[in-house]
Image 1 (cartoon, one colour):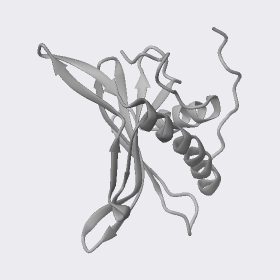
Image 2: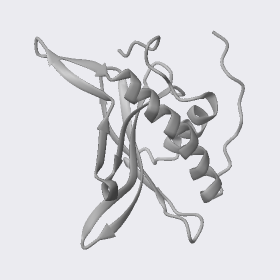
Image 3: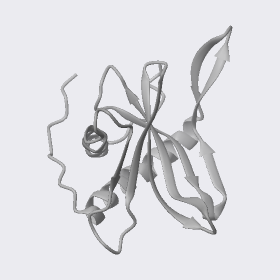
Length: 152
């Protein structure tokens, strides 16, 4: 498990947005494309894998350049299986700029997977994701219900 006291989860609104977006992936698929508004890049959401109590999702814009898929950008989000509305930003990739930053990663210790992270980079990914997810919702015209924060 990720030590949530040290790692930064998305803000409440971004968690709502991402939980709503991944919930529309059909049960028999692991992918959805959202392309509601001409003039804006479509959004691609992929369920990548489940590991160490987390499901990992990719959210990306991309385009083709000379036959290659170019991420513009792509982010990976780790979704806590114990709290489906809690996400951690763990990767930022932007191909045209040559950027690939993995802030959450898995290593194997005694043949068992263990999650590790770079806290400063992960916090930067979280700050970017909080703004980017709001932009995606605005550009695609997606309506996300606003719910109250859970009391702990």
